[in-house]
Length: 219
Length: 289
Image (tube, rainbow over all chains, first blue to last red; front, side, top):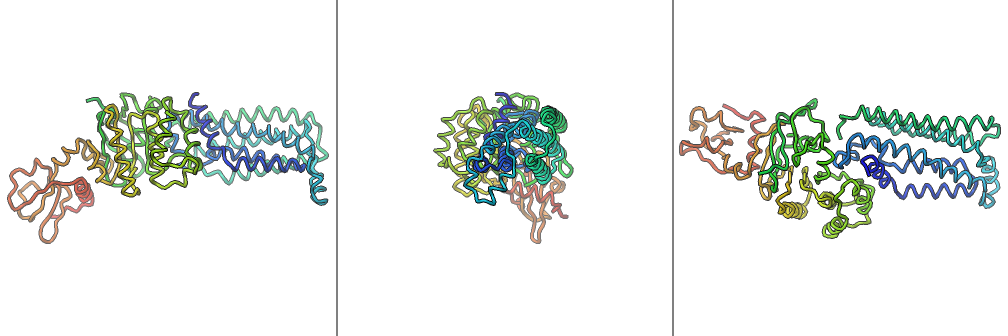
């Protein structure tokens, strides 16, 4: 295992927390009741929380990388990979939750009013809804890569900013999933593919800039 | 004697502080106490050795390797203990091992488990909830479980109770029985240094004030006391931390400068604590005519 993979492993082990499990379980429960938007929100959040160290601007939590036998470059690349993978891979369980929601397995247990509310969400696991989900996830991935770059280069505590951006993206995704008058499906599928590629490209560029700018940064 | 650590003409400047021309060496098989007041540059020097701080000039050699260009290879063979926990506080001992062990090719799981047992550390509790002594022991267990040949400890005993301090010093004494190892131990608790160090480096205001064996230090300096009028001409300038008071003066002086002193001036052996105090007094411009 090289230094980059060891760093990814470091973040992965550090992210395995009870909070992640709780959020995933909550997502499953919401999906069983047919609440797709909530399920997706929680799935994304679960994966974001899976990297608790990634967005930390606390120097104490970064000191370990000055002690472990790993280079600065490997730490930076590993960190971008961890965050990128967490956000992008978060799409997979989200699609699962979307599919589960479409079954509305437990929605008949809900009180009348609440059931009507949840049924107002289409929660359909179609190419269209999956594409919209992919667009939102790609945008999140690019936004996180950009903010991570800003945080590591300038040391800005971007926590509030990224929470706001995340919230906006999730609201966007939820609203779009709830609309009945969405335009043509093909447009969204193509956009989703382009967005995924663009997100990877943006992340790679942000990572390369961060590696260069932080080559002499101290731990 | 082969040096396990060698620092030559290290310079590192920050806005309000600078390490200036730091040079010292630690031979294999010995413990070096690294002492000085708070802010004297001990931690910056240690961070430079670990390549955590980017040095301006000079050379740091560990195991004969360059600490900057061979940083990864060097760190595989170094164990580090800081005064505060650098491991993930939200994980337990088992998770910590899972997290850091892949970084070290020589990681020994059985040895780590043994240390955890010997140190009586619970393996199912968040390490952030550990006491300071327990956190220090965990860092030591991690440092010793990958076959570290050089231990670097930055103020590990500050804030520890006497029992935990004693345990740590015992661990270091046992560790150094292997003559291929070395320990650099920074502290401002000089009693710890008096007890276990073979070599001492004193830093003051970013410069090396003394480096050498503990015995040479204790033989090399004396506290001088008496009446100011009895000081022979030219001797006062050789004193460090000269402090005049109503009935006399006291200061630190090199043993070699005590030859031919009048009987009215007394000298006595200086402890490391006293040496540090006189260095600080010199810095505070307490020299008075």
